[in-house]
Image (cartoon, rainbow, N blue to C red; front, side):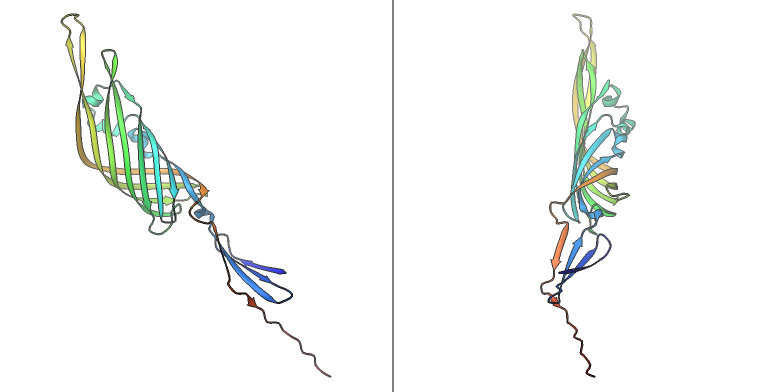
Length: 254
């Protein structure tokens, strides 16, 4: 059995031809290999921009196919510097003794119209994000706690690029319907008539209201793992063999 092979560059179709020396029959089969840029289907992601609003989120994204992916993650929140700049005169920030750690979470469902998930191209995303920020207040030797919660549900437009094999950059912007649940603290001090000590009375008035919010992000991703939904190699052998014509030489009679 003789083997003759012809192929193209990596990531395209490779055609293999096999010829039986005895019978002269030639069999052809093609193998379609998915390129390296499309083979990874899992990513660990870190978003740098939320650092300026006191959040450090770490996420995970899974590609279902070339058109759909799902991302989710957890984060730690400290102090929202941008919100404090706007509402710094409020008692929530003005009377706080310290910022307390809290947990945030998010989820994003992405659609890639051109079928280039995890490759260079754009996407549309449906985004959900929950960020709570907590403050601590010293009240009569104990710590009072108040929290300002941001819940965003919105749409984003983003672009993903692959500067190297396992590194991907993700930039996006969008708009969201933002719901704010705010614990507005009030500390009232008075003198105890019996002991003569200054006593503080800590109370919270809850305030809720909707508004619009902007969504911005710059993510660095590390890609790994192959898809569990797709086969990396698809083989399509020809149904019927092609028979090679044999050439016969005729002898000349002298």
